[in-house]
Length: 114
Length: 109
Image (spheres, helix red, strand yellow):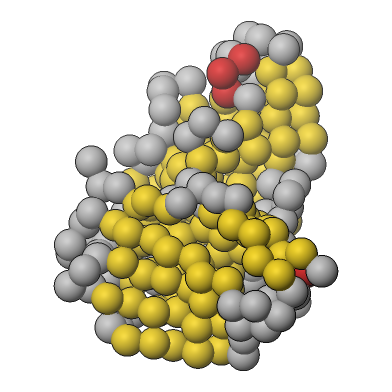
């Protein structure tokens, strides 16, 4: 079975541009998570969905960040406008039936904002 | 602030030795505990999870949980060079997952 699929793998863009990151969770998984990882702050949970519904977005750093999950097989994380401090690796993960079940991570998107 | 603390390392052990990785957490109500392995430039990969006090073994890996002392540890027996990676401790409570900064492990041949 395919794992969590993220795209793009790498994104380089200029400050002020809109950035959209995409994620396809493992089929049948009810939970989807977006994380950000930086050297300074480590791995941080941004937002998570249960059955396509956003449950907790308290980790989203600013209003410039938004996430959607229009169906069970697709989610996006959008940054508009982007800033250099948003540069990080963004991971999407999914888990089967509950938040505290083991999470399976995608390969991540390495985002660089110039 | 709910904290998850790990020694950043690097922790260096010779091949074949036991590597011991430790993690302490501040939220006494924490319910579930996870260890992830992350190779450089790769995504985290689940190694072990534990919910109850005591030890849980899976192959060369043993997770140990002591809720009273608020620590969880990971032992890697017969360490191999392929175990060289950063190990992240994650702690869950009430729809909140917190990760430690990770311990970098190097296993020398």
